[in-house]
Figure 1 (cartoon, rainbow over the protein chains, first blue to last red):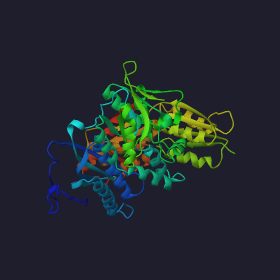
Figure 2: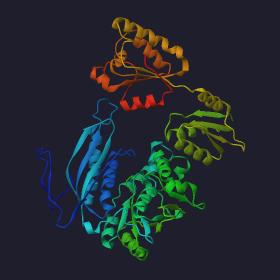
Figure 3: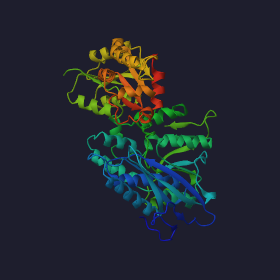
Figure 4: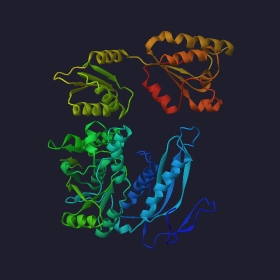
Length: 323
Length: 203
């Protein structure tokens, strides 16, 4: 159980109560709520639990929020045969998740497990946020510079791990290194700098999520292929064809709003759409404050990769330009 | 080395890449890989290119790609793959038989049951066009009651005919555990099957 030093849980579930009484965040703060559930990724139950928790918490961080309380949501096939995953796997997943919830400073307000055909795990997260200062999906302005805080490649690495491709043990370590990392520091920078637009990179990939933001904001966005950060092995595995179908789907779905310049690397222009799990935050920062943002991130030991910029609409259309 | 032909239809990523990689261990001079989805065609192309083959990707049908790699310069689909492609082109009809009762016709149920068994035993005469049998309502009882009809269904399934059995109906008749043949399915699969079929027979 994650600690609760402030006594946020007023009345818990220890006596089989069905609902949990949670103290509200301080006056003036709004709630930011989200739920995210994943199928297993990689082969470690505990690190999958950490990943699923980091992934769910990330939606709160992407707005600049602070996680307040969480609820576990789990699906697990009840073991009937010797080959079935034992119930200890579920315990490991939850242990991993709670480690990340504790790290995030949130409390556990219960959860629900159902008997299901496949393992799934995630969190419903409630965060606290100053509503006037929340970073939004539709707050991009032409001239903004795009800073990404994690390397890309979870979709590729997960595929390589599934295929047991040579070197997959290292690929798994590399993948979990990124996916279990909380986006706390990036959220802190959103708050400290009052950034207006940010998102977290997950299933639609960097390109898909950026295009969504551009459409919401009425702007175009340019990504610089050569500046994209990739996890170790990601490009190598992708060049062997270990690209998940979802990545191609993301690319094809975005295709009528995407322009790929002839100078862009062909493989990277596809990997822009690699479906991420627990990806980094994409921060839109006004040009004159880019250095400040990078310094703030680095001071918190968070990487800052400058990957692109925001442009006005092109031909009255929101476009994603891959250069 | 010899040419290689891989039939990776029905496989999703990364399986076609894994199969192709295994085949490449024999260092074939020409390798043709058949896949039925676009991501697989692109991924197999990448693997072959990475393995220093010159590659051609041909889309032969809406969901059939032949990805051919050649260690030399010229690149043509190998003969064995060509034969499969031609054969799949000939398959123009998908006949679906829709059974909503365990009896054939109405009048006398004893006679109807006999006729149904005969009907199922005679269905193989349709040849390769017979694609799928969908059983709903009383039709699902055919999958559970021992007898000639059940034997006929087992034979049909063994010959490659797909049998879809309505799960809701099995549950209604308490037959989920007794079902001996076919794949338990839902209404979405049934409606999709009806849509995909070229011809539907409802005896």
